[in-house]
Length: 130
Image (cartoon, rainbow, N blue to C red; front, side, top):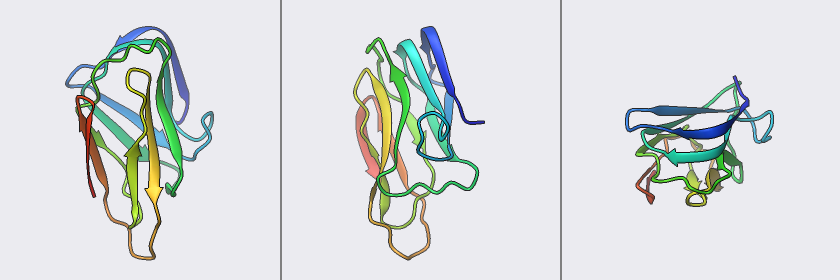
């Protein structure tokens, strides 16, 4: 279920970890999962983002998934699995290195059927394929 997890200690994700977030809308409190941490040492493994409750991301939708209050997050997720978007839309990484993981839907949708969009980063070097 959608919610915010706040952790007051250091956490990390290993190379085999899967960190999953659900998107059900754009409201930071009730619309999607968030992780707020006082200190994240290492973020690795896979980021998995899924939609729930029939939610369909639209252009301009913004999701701040992780907030690291200490600003000391190392590395980036080794891979990402993101929801399919309508043709013409894509995922853009607007994360702030060491501080947050932010995804934004960009582009202009067309009336064509939806296609799968993927986006991946490795060690803070984003590459996108649509």
